[in-house]
Amino acid sequence: MIDAPSCEKALGEDRQAVIGRLHAALWALEHDDLAGWRTNVDALIQWRSQPLVQGLAKLARELDTALGNGSASPNASLPEACARLEHVVHVSEDASHHTLDLIQECGVLLGTLPDAAVEEQAATIAAIRSRMSEMTAAQGYQDLTGQIIRRVVELVRAVHAGLGEMTDGEATPIHLNHSNRGYGPSVAGVDPQPATQDDANELLSSLGL
Amino acid sequence: MDKNIRILIVDDFSTMRRIVKNLLNDLGFFNTAEADDGVTALVELKKAPYDLVVTDWNMPGMPGIDLLKAIRADASLSKIPVLMVTAEAKREQIIEAAQAGVNGYVIKPFTAATLEDKLNKVFERLGAAA
Image (tube, each protein chain N blue to C red):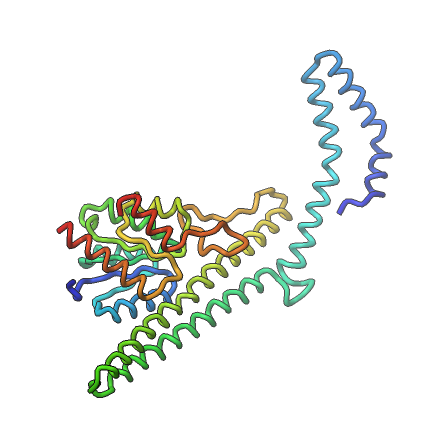
């Protein structure tokens, strides 16, 4: 960061130059010399922003060291954070597939039962099958949470890359490339209220679908 | 409804492909194939005739909305009904999909009953149009 003593030192060294620039800028303004006004004001802005830019570059280097390669804290680097999040996606994917295996096995087991002799038994088996279908659909949580986690991973990678670019002296704004890919699931309290299935039905119906 | 129709399931998450496949199986549809994004889906669609595409929107490579537009722009594929099953739930996205020629739109998370209802509606309209 830019500390006060260094600012004061810089001010002392450049005091005369700044006074000269200010006088020149004022003189140019009073005499309708727009080019002179701009030149002197630009010089003042450059002088003022120099410590800020240097401070930001130093901050970016420190952040890159602390978070980028984890040398400051071995378990807290940005790449490792991404790896942990991706591990969560894999673990939940495996658990979801295991649940789907068990649901399918239950379906096979139900099929081995002898034909229901009474109507109530047949109705119970149909009700169990219907609930197994809903259990299958409910495993969709893995896709939704996975999409959200991948979006965070993408953001963390963009921050990491952005820090690298800042320390390399390039000022590229951090951004996510999405184009037409979509936004992923809405998160309550972060994203705008999403459309419900009923909203979508109404909207499509109004469009003739 | 002919239960032998060939259905292509497109989603980048293997879990979701399996969920949609299992739910289709529960409804009696067993003739399915899978693709993990729009590019591989188009390759699959060119290889064999399909009667229905069930696709996600948000996928790396080619997203579902671009797949839908590519299907509608290709004379040999343009008549295939497309059901979008997606977490994308912005009003403008639903309108964009409708304008691109989607046949149904299911918002994730969905229930087995909702998927069945939307499939039936797609088939009903196709039956009425035929």
